[in-house]
Length: 245
Ligand code: ADP
Ligand code: MG
Image (cartoon, rainbow, N blue to C red; front, side, top):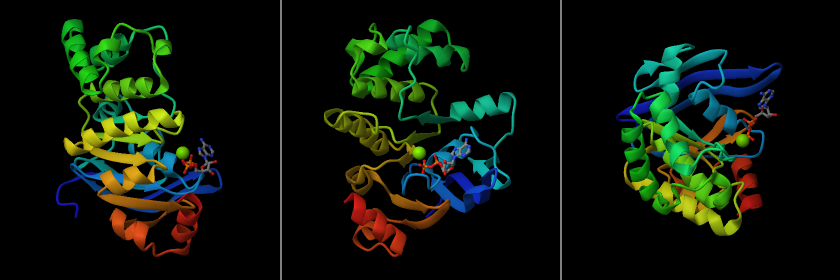
């Protein structure tokens, strides 16, 4: 694996005070790969995502993106954030801006694009997530599934090298989950490098190249989905799967 690594974590340790929240994490995500991260609540999945995006600092270990160590601060850090998009459980759209403005804003402010170029790109991306007709609306006029697709379009608008998803469908009503997962499946087919924290095991089976199972701050298993689901090795993974499947 890892012929052409995009995200590399080596020996990463992170503490929140006494809590050793990430323990000796080694993880490599190759270009174009889709890695699904699963595990019990509190096992460190969100912290792992936030660490990759430098929303959290670590006490030891190295994290590289496309061969370069992550910057600690300043302009380089803003650049990094633009290169690794993040989609959260809560969509975090600007309520007083239209859908189009939501997707264009960071393109103008961070990427320095002209408004008309940003808007053109935004319309392309809104079309790609099936929301071309919603461009002039405000977030509150959209369903949760539509808002999350806007959030995905907004992340894509920065032309990221990779996308991190932290439970992107957990806040959605059941009937809206699939429209978001379908957009994510399409991104995967188009070759986007993705790290996805999710409880949607159907997505993990159908879209993931690897499943990473975390427990108590450690990566306990890191395997192909079929192997993981049919033959989990660790008792912790067996126990977890018996509760959710
Ligand atoms: P998961 O996403 O797998 O549910 P998290 O990464 O959110 O897990 O949290 C892992 C552990 O770290 C939990 O015990 C959580 O309470 C703790 N934690 C998360 N964020 C913070 C923080 N900012 N300060 C202190 N503890 C935190
Ligand atoms: Mg979490």
